[in-house]
Length: 355
Image 1 (cartoon, rainbow, N blue to C red):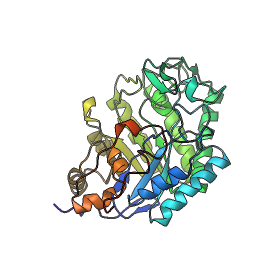
Image 2: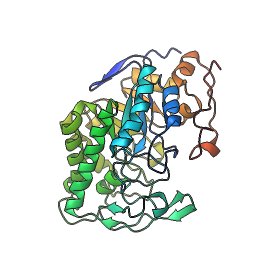
Image 3: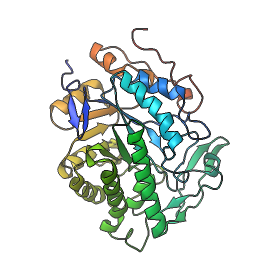
């Protein structure tokens, strides 16, 4: 089977892609204690530059936004300077990157955050799950319900992070709106029990995300902004009474901004056909994600069901994944023991196909 559709070029907003094989964002927990990426990240992303587009691991837009151990930030000039070396390396190999902006909200633990960093959320409702820390699995603390001023402050932090991303050489930014993080917390009835303009009605629960998208779009250009969603995703103790209604309305609201793309995790286990929902309600380009083979991805693109497909873990052990797809080569398997944390092992030492 040929993979002509998968290897055809496409333009997502202002971003021109040579192929439709996207590297999905993946937390790898290898940043410094100061939230900086290092030379290891330069090598890691450069090795995978043959992707049509690389979406970075989630970067937190503030100290409060950090949830996991050793994840990188993008809210200070020194963060942008460190990331600029990564994007330059990727560009030198003909690739390009988008930065995923990830504010974890109530998700996290003090062992993973800077001293004095806060846990902010729409409502003071703790996540019932546990989270990995340097001291093992720990319960998550009860967050503070955000004031209206704090909501505006966090939105400004997102904008600052987006501006720094463009300055650092990223082609755009992606707002992480799933996996139980702050935007998803505002969207969901189980985590948002506010009684002001940011909670209660569906329109109010959408307000934080739509305002944030609007602000980021104004700052860096709507055609350089993507949004990632996964309707009905229960990760990090997330629950919504009617995710189909919530995300249909969200996608209809996003249409106004003419974004570069919508990144949809299909997650069949939820029982909700997220891609069908996206096609019914979103008018722009759709990137699909979650356990695609090259053949299935090619067929989905050829049939007009999606515009591109992102691959996560296959890119970890197969840095030259597009070449392996094209050659019909067997894919290497990842070592799960080195997925998170550590240094070069399991990060930059997976060999290319020709090695």
